[in-house]
Length: 319
Image (tube, rainbow, N blue to C red; front, side, top):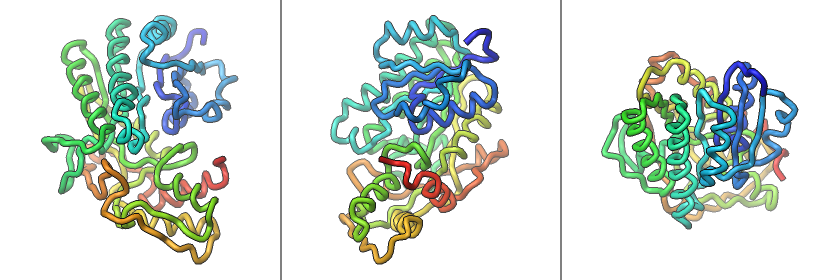
């Protein structure tokens, strides 16, 4: 990495979203450093970039302050894209310590290193989960916010620390609240779960909840486009955007699309019951996109188009 045009760090850079972000940043001429502990990230997600002289990967636990500090000392970053987190909300519900460690404390350690080395720009991957199970159309300043998952709570706590860092350390921070993101390289989620179940049993599919859960879905490459669009247009201090499509898809409809894409017939849907898939799941939400639309951004695909694109892209690519 000699004399790079730009130094950027992606935490969680071997993960589902982080690896796609790395691809886009490299294509734009940046020098990209990825750190990932590979608990959810996969080496295969970044293998195609390992021979690129502008790319470096470090298997690293962000909570190892000595090793994480050494990365900041070596590369002198201009921007940090902080995506490292426990994105498997169900696992966090079973073990709350996962989100304390991987979702909140990774943010704390990142802010600590940024302060120490004078890095002033942070792009943070937050989530619609910070709103909890709230009614109405949710805007960025809607509140009070009462998350119902430990993941959402840890993301909200991270947002609060980032806000304080903007005031105390002169940080410029962009917070983006993601909806449900789908696409190739995913490691969990309803689509991933449905395909794996149907490969094991093409005659029957168990759907958690009653199938009427209604959620927006954003294709991963549209999300990355939105991240970089918002980053290039955010001002000083703290900026926050909801990001996603304007529509939503019911879980049962997603299952129907996947069954058709897999060429299956007469699949019986079985439901676990209740209005949500698991404790901490938000069965239905809608948030305002007026703020990011005012900048001129919207995704290339609707929620249903995102589902169609995602299933076509990664069918047959999972183990």
